Amino acid sequence: MWPDDTAEVIVANGAPGIMEISVPTAPDGVAGKLDKTKLESKQTAVLTIKTAKDAKSGTLNVRVEQTGQLIPIQIKIKQQQQ
Image (cartoon, rainbow, N blue to C red; front, side):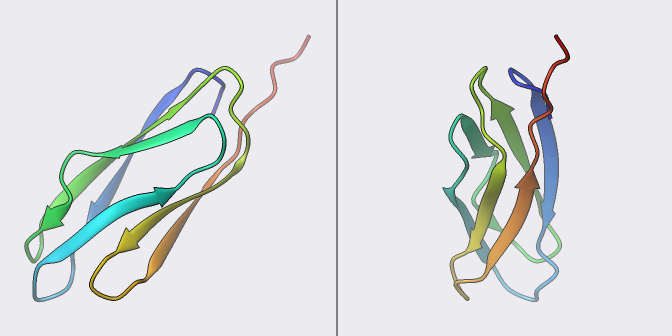
C-alpha cells in the first residue's frame, strides 16, 4: 500500500455458527474498520484499511472473539521514489 491509501479485504465466516470479529492491533498510521463485527454462518464483512502519510509497515490483526484466533494481514508501505 502507499501512504494515504485505502484497500479492502473480505472476511468470511465459514463456521456453522455466529462469529464476532474485531481489529485489536494495527501498525502505526494504519487503521482498520469492519463494516460489521457479527457474522452469521457464510456471511462476509468488508475490512477497510486506510494508511496515513506516515504509516509504517507491519501486521494488522483481525481477532475471532469466540476462539481468540488472530488472522494476520501483512501491511507493506511502499516508499515513493524521490
